[in-house]
Length: 618
Image (cartoon, rainbow, N blue to C red; front, side, top):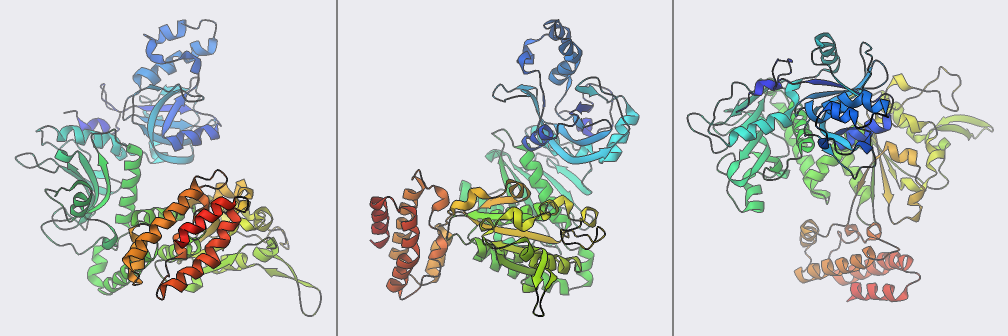
């Protein structure tokens, strides 16, 4: 077994010591964003071709004697190909003394000819991204090994908070390799990760059926507690990231929302028709196939998300002292279960959307008519706040006459004659949120693409950005009395917009606004969840099956139409309230809601229109 101490990052001597590399990108922000999003790092000079054809750095340099820059960079390219190792730390430098981020190398050298540029790449698990000032260091090459420059490495580690033990992909590879042997030793593994105890087990005395890695806080143990954990089911080639629950004893703490997460036993039964040897009562966060290349960036993100949930749980000592918190947690759980039940989305998808909203602060729900965009938006607001209170939510609808003065601030006529400066609905909403920083406030904009967005938002376009939600970025508005009168959008304000993809004006949405919002597409959902809803409405089984079939057939016509597509489908929300008497209720929906929609779609194709209506009326 390889010694896991090589990942401790102390710059040990020897071929297994972790190395620190400084990579120069200067002010190429676009390329840095590309690298970060794709989880790679790259070098240009694409016409060199695959570096594997070179036998040494001298060979590489001598191939191009007429190109001085190639000669100068030969050592850096050779290092990138041969000397950078899996698990090494890459630190990205911008201009002069600015550090842009760091990550861990997770692959060998790759030459990807399909890329348009920077074809020499290494895959990287990026950990942090931002801007940090360090002591300026001249760089004559694109890549240099700074491992032996201890003062500089220590400065970077301290400034960026680099923790080499945070390299879960490398650690997980090591764990999986050892799990395939009879080696039960664990002394060389790191003892902590992100402030949690890190424990590893391959069995005691004999190999365990299910080796594991667990992350526990001071209030929980493996024998009595809850904790994030990796469980390796070797015989099934599956590693489960789980909401771990102790087997021998019950824990005072509990994972919330257990009803919406499958147990390992339930997941194995549904997907594998297997029964887990152990830990079947723990809850599934994610499952990865070890007989395929592992998606380490995804694994790292999943673990980080689970650890954040774990750290946000109520402290066990507080639970001892205040039993009333149990009642509060129970009420929260009931509310979340109720909201999860109302939304026609999988629990994992709802959680992902909530996390996206928390991170980006601005979200647009887009989809065809009838998928419940506004309905979902309001329930996402309640899930974000963990309560149903109207005073924290404001809903408006944009239209072509809506203006900056309505939304932000402007002069309005007054009854006594003349004009007075009045605040718009969003301005007042932000003032309320600013005075109540302990609560989240959600502003919902229905049909956001129907307004002239540049005109309505004005200079707020910049303030919407999630990283500019503080007084530091406050600016004077158009109607400010003086430059000292400034405005900003507080951090506890979240904006959810809805957008109809069947609306032809969708293409007119301002690109600058698009960049500031995360987009989630809601699709028609005629799955088991829809069927259960209609069964709850006491509708006959044969009617339900026929309805699902007919809608699927019409939606297929829409999707395959070159002038329409998936954004024009008929949504499920038209039919979720169907109840007895069934025939007049169904006829009313078809005649008054669906037919006009289809007539607009196929105004120039009578044959398709007639066929679609025949299907729905059959």
